[in-house]
Structure formats: C-alpha cells, structure tokens
Image 1 (cartoon, rainbow, N blue to C red):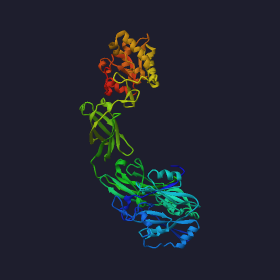
Image 2 (cartoon, one colour; image 1 turned 180 degrees about the vertical axis):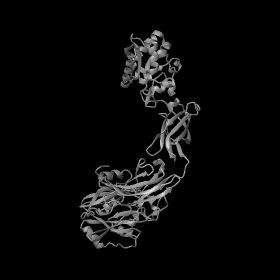
Image 3 (spheres, rainbow, N blue to C red; image 1 turned 60 degrees about the horizontal axis):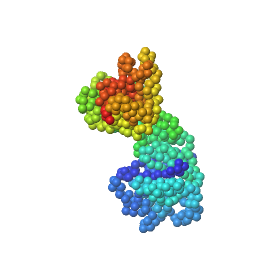
Image 4 (cartoon, one colour; image 1 turned 45 degrees about the horizontal axis):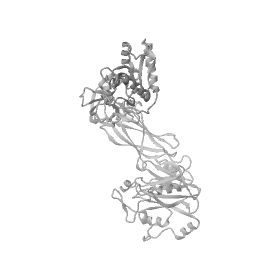
Length: 624
C-alpha cells in the first residue's frame, strides 16, 4: 500500500458481543464554558459489516443483524428525517454523515443514508445525530472495502490500493463519502479495545486523549467550521489507585487505576513501586496495561522485590502525549507473605538439533528467603552421571532464569538428557525446584555446496576428511583470521627459542594438491601415499584453515621440544594438532605433529577432551 494513502479499519471482535453491558462504558465529561454546559459521551468505536436480514450467528452463538437488511424496503418504520431535508442536501451537493451506536454490538456506525439511519434507529441502534457533513461531488473519494474472512472494513482514498485489494479477496463496496472541506476529522485509537474512533469534535478528541485513547491526528476533512479546542488548563489531572486480587500466600496484588483524566493527553500510565523495608533499592517502574472502560491495571509480586514484607510505596505518574512525566497521586499497601514453601518450574525450550543446543528455563519461582543463584546439573543417560556438568543460570529481566546447554560438552552425545534445577537461597540452602528429561537429536553435518560443516559452540566448523570432500572449485585462499593467529603462534615459538622458519605450507588449490598427490603416488604407491597425503578434493589445505609448521632448515617441524610445546599450546591460538599419534584409523592419516588446523575458540574444548576432530563432533572418519 502507498504510504501516503490514508485508510481506516473498523474491526469488530465477536468475542465482545457476548456480555450484556458495553465493553467500554459510556462516560460523561461535563464542563462549564462561557456559562454553557458541554457534555461528551463515549462509546466503543465503529464497525459496520456483520448484519444480515435474519442475522448471522457468531462463534459464540450470538446472532447479529446485518447491514444488508437495513436498506430493505420491506420495513414498516417511517423515516424520521424529512424528505425536504434530503432534497435540500442533494441540491446543495452535500450530505450529512449520521452516527449510530448499538449497545449490544458495542459498535458505532456512520452512514449518509437517511433511510438506513431511521431503520437502524428502530432496531436497537441509538441515533446520535449528524457527525459531520460531506460533499457529494467535490474532494477526494473515500472508498470502502470489506474482507469477509477478517470481518474488517477498510476506508482508503487510494484508488490503486482499492483496486489491488479488490483482487485479493476484499469486496469493493464503492464510494463511501468524500474528504472535502475545512473541518478536520480526527482519529483516535485505544490499545486495550483495539479500536479506532473518529470525531469532528476537537473537544471530544482532547478529552478522550486524556482517558487512554491515543490521538492519531487528522484522518480526513468534512464540511463546516473547525470545532474549538478546550480552554487552556481545562479539566483536572485525576486518577485513583485501587488494590485488588490480594494474595497473602505469595505476596502479590493488582493495582487498578481508574478515574483517569489527563488534560495534556495520555501516552502511558507509569507506577514506581518499592518496599519500605529496602528503601528504594528494590524500586521498579511498572507500565500499567489498558483494559475496558478506561481502566488500567498492573500486577505487583513480592518476588520481584526480593520478597520484602511490610509496606509497599506506590506512586502514580502519567506520561503525556508530549512526553512529559506528571505526578498524579500516591498510596501504600502492606504485603504479608505467608507461604514458606519454595516453588518453581523447569522446562526445556529452543531445542536446536542442527547446532546441538537447548535452553533450560526455570520459571514461576517463589523463594521467600531470596535467591543467590540457580544451578543446573545436566547429564546424559548413556554415560550415567559420569559426564555431569553444573551450569549457573542467568537471571532474565522478568525474574526467570535461563541456561543454554551445548551438547558439545557431552561429546555430541545423542539420546536422553537429564536436567535438574537447584536454588541456592541467600541463607545458604540448596533446594531442588524441578527436573526434566528429554531426547536430544543431533543432525550433525550439513553440506553448504562447497564443503561439509557442523555447528559448534561459536559457529560453523568445516569438516574435511576422507569421508567429506571439498568442492574442486572452492578456492578461498588463506583465511585472514587463521593466518593472523598462525603468525602470533609462530612468533611466540621463535620468542621462546624454537627454530621456526618464516616459510610454511598453507593454502593449496585443488590443482596444486592434485600435482602433489600424484607425485607421491608415483614415488610410494597409492596405498602409502594415502597415509600422509590427501587426494585432490579431500585436503584441509584447500580450505585455507590448515598450516604445516616448518623448522629453520626448511623441513617439517620435528624438534621434540617444539613439537611438545605446539601440541599443548596451539589451542591458545585457536588451533588443534589435527593428526595425532594413535588416531590413524579415525582421522585417516598417520601422525603429523606439524599439521595444525584453525578451529577458533572451541579449539580449547577439543584439546582438553583429548579427542580428534572426528571423535569430538561424532562424525565419520577413517579411509575413503
């Protein structure tokens, strides 16, 4: 849709049609201006689309009248608007837009059809008179569409949008009225009711803006003089704090804010709350949520205030449409926590079989003595508790705790995992709050079109061996990060006195590896060559992540002290010694203490495990 188009959606929520009383109760606001009384009455906003002659049944079994029936000529009631008035309106090229309100449906309806206005007036709709006047010939056309699935009306001045939506399941209902004249028609929106309201009355616009409705500016124009705003400093800043739903067992309560009036408009309702016991060390600013009838509400729980008992201080502020924070009133409430039993729930979420991770969530915690930390022991059923690890969960903003578990810590073991959660209270007690068990799948390797990779703790790691080749066209050159780490490593070895050459064997293209391999085959035979040289398309050197360290004589590193240091320190630089002694049947190659492969931060985990890359990630290796 074009950003410049102005359109309006009237939404009817069928679930709101059950109760007998309006969702948004009428209000009256009365003020004396120049000796005259001005009164405004508020209803829920507009919807016009669900009426049939016999009525249509909603999902709740509610039967609602239909708009089609309102224009039937078989209605006995007589129009109350005179024919002369209609002729005068037509001849002057203007028409009145009338407003009606249905208390059962809790919707407003706008119509320029006097016959419809009178018929609906006899069918339970309240006739509220002329809302504004519209031109019949001048100004921008405002088109109406209706979507039967969503039960939504759409008003737009954009003909392109009107045509486009007509091809996408919307019913085109033609021109609704014209946007023309000097009188602004304002739009408001209530987040709690999820409805829009339209008014030509600036004073109504201002009053509703101070009662939870968001002022959205001018929607379109009508014929007539613009209405006058309220006088400066009109109205009074008001709001009442009411404590409800008190739970003395857990120390929770609701604050209901009613009687809201904010002459400068209302953007949000804010309440700073703190306990007298802890001063303002446990101060939390809450934002109340809008409900029906202009009411706002927020729930306060002692667990968010370190389970403080005694008086809680509550202040009420309004944030105006201009962003100004205004104090309204204050109150207190006494909290008594009677329950002493610790409670909590443990759940497993965000299971990622590609990356081999899952999250442990500890929620709904109730710990009257306070929480020092939350510990999560995890182990696999396959290894009993031999592989148990303890994790410390991180506190979230909502008071829950969470820990991410990497199955790399369990050598990528598949199958059943056991999870417990313990609370360590501020008085030193360790208390169990819940357990969970689940089956973990791990999909392992993925092929990205160039090479195979597996997701480690910190990202994807390429896997290249005799079972997992690399594409012949892949030609990345030396990886800059790996090269920088290699330089740091070899410089440190030189600083320690090891004879390390500035030459090395790094990246090799497919064609280079092909020449090397077949030279070795011609010299030693293929079976022997396969023990120490990769076939073209199977070499780690082609990835740009592998390096052979050379001694000062130009040969492969063989000095015992240098080899030992490299084996036990390469991981500090993100490398592993790729082909270890005694692992030939797993890696596919004889021991090469000079061949190092860049992994990144997870190199330390692999080193400490004592495993080869294949063993650590649980991927196939060995021969071709």
